[in-house]
Image 1 (cartoon, rainbow, N blue to C red):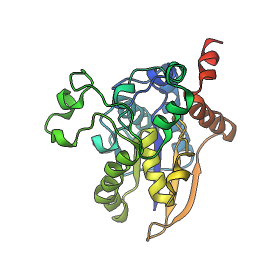
Image 2 (cartoon, rainbow, N blue to C red):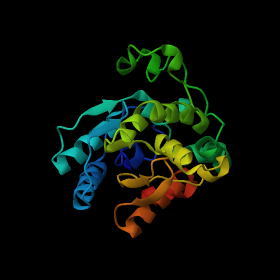
Image 3 (cartoon, rainbow, N blue to C red):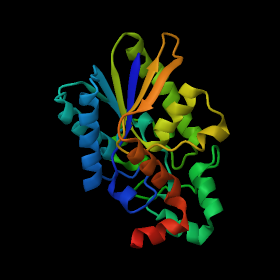
Image 4 (cartoon, one colour):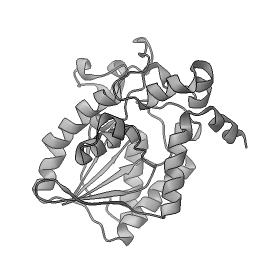
Length: 254
């Protein structure tokens, strides 16, 4: 069984180095090109799909649309679930990561970004970003909608959704494509690879690069690899690593 997972292309807020979370921002021009490139790599490598999954956030939805357009597979069924959303970054959403490091210190920002169980500051309930009052989450039990999340919280919604819904498709023989977000994908990586809480903190997911897993019938991993140029993949991973550093603010000015 093969499973392909793609983190959405660069978003407008990724480009500005802002905490995004559940903020519904679109792809940047670069992100659009990343999504188109991902579709071409999938087609070039002979990968095809029967069903696709994505989140409620437009940067992932638009990435998936562009990938399918590039593969001439726009007719494929797509299931959207908020359970594949990015981690909710609470009151940090919309703040510049480097500037937040200047204010609170890089160590504190690294804890907020990369610790397993520590939550960021909670979002004010009166904020327009409160999912409990946003249209796209109407009909969902408001008690299920967070105002902030740790990675641990994100895993608690992503992994059960995979097991209850997506895994069943795979076991029935359907070829699955998931387009999601850095932390929802890290949640799956931790689960698939049985990583410790410390090990998953060192995992960084590049934007717009297909990640291919191959499993046996018991969901043991037979193979794992990214599709694309190794140098470019490494460069993208390192850009994710450096997002919270004060130095990244100086790099942006160059």
